[in-house]
Amino acid sequence: DDDDNDEEEELAKDDDDEETETGKGGDEVRESEEEEEIRQEEEESFDPIPRTPEESEEKSNDEEDQDLRLSEEARIQEEEDANELYPFRFEERLRSLETSFSEYRQTNPFADAVSAIPGIVQQFMTQQMTEAVQEAVQIQIDWLQDSLQRENDEFLRNIDESSSSSSSRNGRG
Image 1 (cartoon, rainbow, N blue to C red):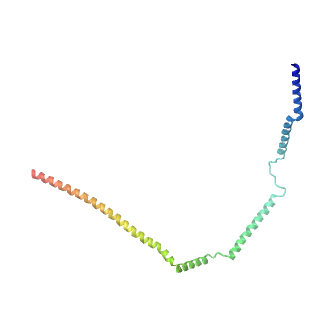
Image 2 (cartoon, rainbow, N blue to C red):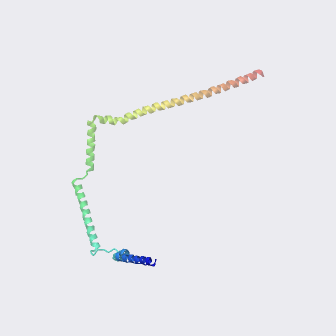
Image 3 (cartoon, one colour):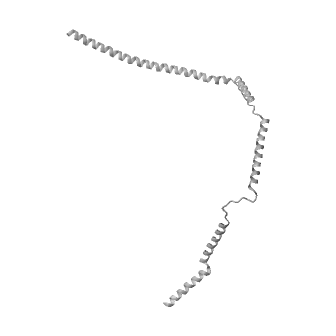
């Protein structure tokens, strides 16, 4: 049994030696050390304060501003030139449109018919409304006459009953 234990111990020792020779555990240690070094280098090289390039930023801004101003001035000048070459002439265009419309109305036979449509519709609506109002008024008049006639008939009946009852009382008494 002791011999068996000795052999097992030697095999275990050999396994430990092989691990260090193949470097299974060592590779992991080396990799983590390399990662740490890279991280440290990155941290050291990181500069939280922004730096301007050696050329002055003011010079580049002035140049950009000047370029923008020049391009804006050029654009404005082009617009002014275009306005001088092709002015809008609102009054002239308005007169031209009025003349064209007037000629169109004179030459187009449908123009008068189209312009007459609102008047025709108005006349029709007035006639329809007049008839509808007259009909509604007649219905109200008929209803009121019937109602008044019933009240009048009832009143006369009450008078007849009163007079007949009083005459019968007078005749008996």
